[in-house]
Figure 1: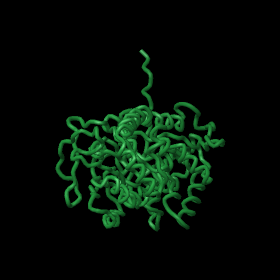
Figure 2 (figure 1 turned 180 degrees about the vertical axis):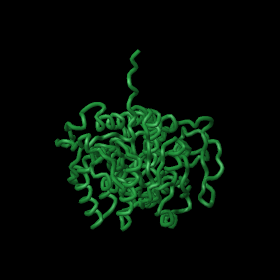
Figure 3 (figure 1 turned 60 degrees about the horizontal axis):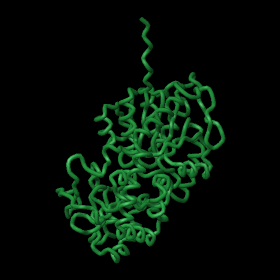
Length: 421
């Protein structure tokens, strides 16, 4: 009896730097889905929580020593990556964030199908000469990416306006809607913070129907790396104005990062710092409002996770933010970046209007379930892989439509040799 040949399971290499925050969560979610689908998944990163999480999933993890920013060590990082690619011999490389995208494209140079996912453009994160150099590289390096994956139409538009001519695909971020839910698996819990700033014992949460935490005081939570991008300094600048309307309000900054000590010096007594936490879901559930005042993003995960937990958000109108919200929330929950006055007005407006707060919480929750489930994201990435590998859709030898009107540069199969060491 004839038996059909088993389906080919391609070897995929994910390359990531940084190893924490939103980029790491995206890589973990994709690796989990791809391993479940039977792909051979290898990941290269500089250790950290990402490496540990990938090993728990069963992925092949390789140590790739690389700093977060470009510098004198870049040539060595590229050489190490080229040797690693020669050992792994992937059929497709998926590079996440600016640094990994830089190193991967220099190491591969079109020899292996390459997906580059910026997770926000590098030239937005810096200024002056550094920004000019980053932009020049992104324009040049686009020739070595078979596809640039943007997490929002706004991020794609930013790239096009900056002159980054590439074959783009937009795949919005997704989150695990089975984990980020309004209720914890057993009992909803409110985290507390000790005087030292680390997470302390937990206690049961009371009703949130009045838009206050269990002790009757409004609780505002900001989840993100403590750095210039996430703009916690703008939220601290807005906080005194919020306290004039809600003097018992409390603010918790969840996360760690290079700006921690500077932010601590700016913070009044009503602000607490948790440091890094393994799971932000309890904080989303405990909060009356989640605020992310970013200066730039591709599409932040924290607002999606908060909405999935049934908590309204206030975010800045940067790339991806408007697309991640239903229209009703966009009208009330978006503020201009670096505008403490507007931020304070939006926060106090939601915390002092219980009916509006409840309505937006419900609409946001339904929106995320419908449009930002990570399973949908993983399916779209899988479709892209199949297209680039020639297993469905356009073959590797035929041009694919480019969203900016050009054609994607596709590498013939005979040129897909591994990088020599």
